[in-house]
Image (cartoon, rainbow, N blue to C red):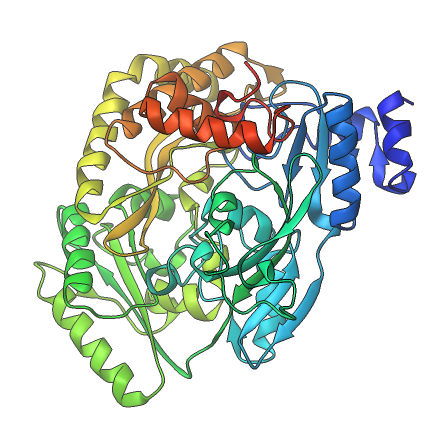
Length: 505
């Protein structure tokens, strides 16, 4: 039992602390097949006060602290950078604290999942609007706020989940506890508004990827779920990426409110059907790109008008075919909305073949840019074919470059879930060092390539936060300003040490 363990044991019960090697290894990875960091100790706090004391101990002992919500991030964000430090597992903090139905605000602990919150709200005919990330059945609310998450449904209408943020309780790196928004007034009984009482300090912790504070309590706007909804799916013709981009743009230009709109590229439809992932599309003679939308309304007339306008946009495109109304007839949109497919389809690129794992480059980009990015990814794949073939020779299956679903989000932007899939170094009972080396080389290469298209990264974690610095993507004055904020809040670089190259190698 280490000295660090003994100090933390004075704050938490030993039941919620572990230095066991097997447990530490269980927390050493996220979703990607490459990045690993084994923590020295696992801590499962119950509230902000326990976290505060742990952070004070960490500062006294110069120990980095890494925060883990659902552990669903794909850039290594919720594990240590290197083998060291304290890992805070937030999943014990998974309670709903208050439902303010009068003001349509819910307050929860940060470790609770989007799935659990929305399951609870459904009993009241309510939901969170943006349903968080595509991994929302397990992804935590705190992680979603830390990443500006989208993908779980409702993003075209509500934007990123941080748009619904009302207030935060945050433990700062040195152990101080603050509240933001309306709760910055100590006489405020319940959260009701994010903006006011001075600057929007909550914004510092939105998208911070866990380097500026530990979110412990979160209040979100919630919304009544409209009574009426319609959902349609379309098979596109040739040049489906360009056609889908035109459709997205037309929807925004005409000001039609959609709940979700999504494009699934030709490659995904083709390979997915070969692998039995899309049985509703098996009968399609042309395995081309798919586009679908979902609209909501409070009246049948409103729903009918929205549907009419959208169909006019889409069916006027060359060789577009509307699929049937039922899921079995190809209506992916109905499955996505009615059967909670929004939490099962988000990264279908990653599941095309058994054992393939994601090396993601998912990002935000303007609607009119993603066709050219996809074309450039095809070129990148050709340029790197020699390395890719080295993996294929071992596995018998070629890694796949492309994109998962491309979905409409805030304004005239989409989330582009691009990247490539590959195999981990352990394949068929053997460790292949060359797979790990090539994966890391190619991953860095594709991230740099996509960055230079001017995209916006949101879930940055270990990999992308450091890449932005390494390739010189941040303007110097911006990076120095961000560094000064980090230094002020976290002078010992305790939280997320190494992210953005703050306080680490």
